[in-house]
Length: 268
Length: 263
Image 1 (cartoon, each protein chain N blue to C red):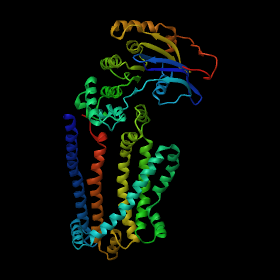
Image 2 (cartoon, rainbow over the protein chains, first blue to last red):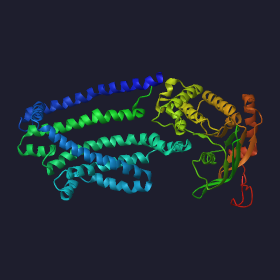
Image 3 (cartoon, each protein chain N blue to C red):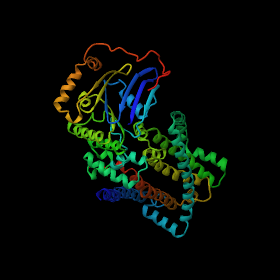
């Protein structure tokens, strides 16, 4: 019985510990808000509205029904671009990780892609795809693809040959080699890469929208900038950051802890 | 009866010949120890028998069906708990989960692991416990040929003795054949029915020693005495660098290739 209760108890304990560790994060965010408030007091509402004024503006934007549709549009573009990048990047990265030649050939390409500023891609995308949805989606894709690719490739390359020998010696069928040897190892490389890609995708989509589209958070930011409406600008920024934090800490981080509990659990 | 025969085994890494004209026979229920200094190709030979390496040339015939391997380090999957590590081979054979769990519990008991330990991940287990899990993983599939690559070298005397008993028990109860590598002549004398001495450059067999005494009647005194006797053998002394001398490279027959050779 204890054999089956133990994991349950451990999972519960881990969740509680995780939630408790959130207090540190909350405290640090509040400290930042205090600094922000101080800056707001010094420079005045026109230049830097304080956190309270910003949140009020944000909530009024939600109440007027202005914020949600724009956020949904941006989220949709991010999701498409990020989904494509993670899917294709991970798949190709795994394939590249299988062969030394492919890994050696793709390394400089990854560096090149990672080094290329997203704004340069954006200019190209505007020329190729015009001012529609495809431009932000493509820019997100191209910015996140090398991150996912590099993570997957590293994971594939670093699997211990000794464990591969174990799989061979115990005659594991190929499907088990995949699910019991490759994937658990690779996931520990994939998750950090995916989280980085998520952060990048939001930044890039807002930038792309700011310059190219007529809707979405980026476009709304462009409008508020044109109207010198600092409070609305900050409101949009807070909304985007809030979504990002929620996705990372409420969704991805708990999943990561769950799949990597063999790594993070402290010894007895 | 299951048996393994190897003749004229050659293996090269690049231009270095690591094994030259190696041959051996192994029958069910028999324990064969390979001893020799580092670099004499013992591990390579074991990997070839395990199917992890394809030799350059060989005439090999094996009727063993279930082959299990215990490596020098435990080599557990860090993302699997002890129970899932022990039953890895069973899962590969398609044994259902409930049956695997039962097997894990009974094996853990045999190995002196608690049920609590079964839920732990490898990094939560001590080195000795990891070795037990590794041996349990091999015994789980009830192999008819067990390959051991110095699995006991890093363990303390007490734990060694305990795992020796498990091994003897397996051989006695199931007629498992064991091919083991060891540096430790005493270990070989204690466990083996035959000892094969190998020397490097190129890796080859130079001496065979048969132990008549049944396992159960091998007292510590007998083990010390026999080891001392073995240490007096010229090939063993030269092989381990205890005495000056050359061991000639002999060829079992004139022709170089395996034309017409059979087991």
